[in-house]
Length: 321
Image (tube, rainbow, N blue to C red):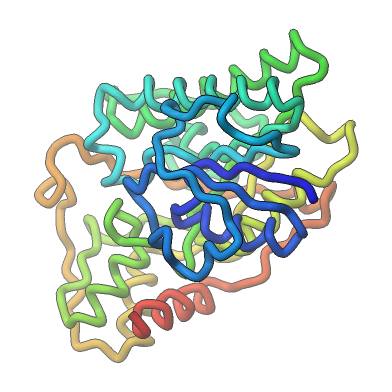
């Protein structure tokens, strides 16, 4: 049986990846320091999973079994979650990628790295982004920029490792606006925040006027895409892949109104300045819409859930908690 190691395995995306690779017949091992975990180590979803509670930098590769694949998810996440790592983000993300690269070399196995759409940087307006699109650093040196540039530098590290080591294989996945079951509101993720506020009858807090555009993508569609990149022929390794659902493009205000409608909540939709809530380090993300033509054409990936269906799933999840 093939073995996979998933770093950040108890996070929102990690939980769904555990399910995917277990269904694919892998023996699943997961590392997580429980700083942003979506489930507890005792959750039923981890049955049969070998779990290591630790920061990955504290784990010696010699203490682990041999793996056939490494999926590197561990990272600070979220527009609010990254703020506490201001000035440390670069070191955290880069130390982690070098650890993952070392593991891939020692295990002589491929490395899947989940990066971020944030690497594209600033855009003046709505832009449909291809993998080879420009990466633009503009404006203040925000925490969000520190996060984005650290992820981009991690991508460059992987690319250059492969150039000097022909045996090193990687895939870079750039997800756009993931959401779905198990996502937490804590780090600033907008849909679970709206849903939990609506279910409690609290104000649904829309940042600014709510005209910001997002294209939310169902988490299981994202995971299916990540998995597909691990099954390709040799010629399609060492690539970047955008994963997102451009058909789900909606405004944040639409999201708030739909959550209010689905939940039947009496909550008021309130426009707020996020810096009043989270402090001056907070920065809103530019409007970026995915162009996933590459993975759709080459790997036949196709997103399956519309935005209203994804909203319904998150409402159902929190209604049952």
